[in-house]
Length: 206
Image 1: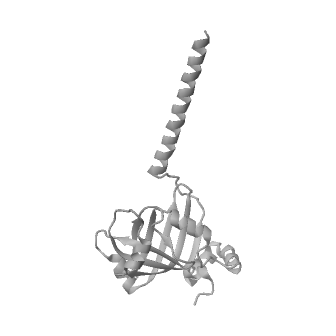
Image 2 (image 1 turned 60 degrees about the vertical axis):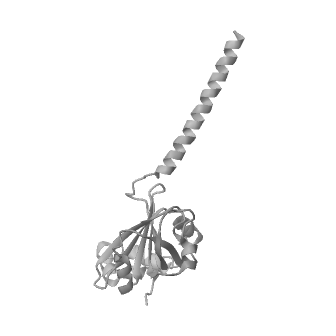
Image 3 (image 1 turned 90 degrees about the horizontal axis):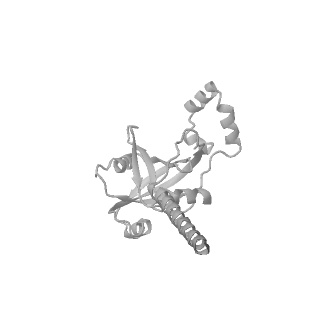
């Protein structure tokens, strides 16, 4: 049983390195103030459900790590309660590495990054695959999304932490850029019409 929520990541070996490199005192103060959150707040839920991409890390029985990307429309990641996140696992290359890892080792990790906001969230927990549950799948499947769901993944949160934006490049989604350009073009068209109207009025007065 961990003394602090951050102990899921800060093992004795990690803490020893922190002590050697001078950061242990600052993290110890964080621990004494309550450490990392273990429940999903409303702000975190909004961030999660706004994402269109997530990285899911698992490890097999021997500890070999594996990272899998999952994506979908905003809202494909669903916060089911203050401890659980769920999403439909769409059919892909059918290697089933993540599913095999989770059968042997339920520990998992979610990494979410928003390049536009330059924010990243790290979530530790346990995950499991749920097969043949139409009711759950109907709850998780994004409406009108053309993908074939194979199964569901439920992720129970143990702890989470938000990183600073340092070194995160700022990038924008193509849809957001297209919307901004369309708004600009509409504004330009309106200004051009106003200029033409003013010219016509000026010519009429000559």
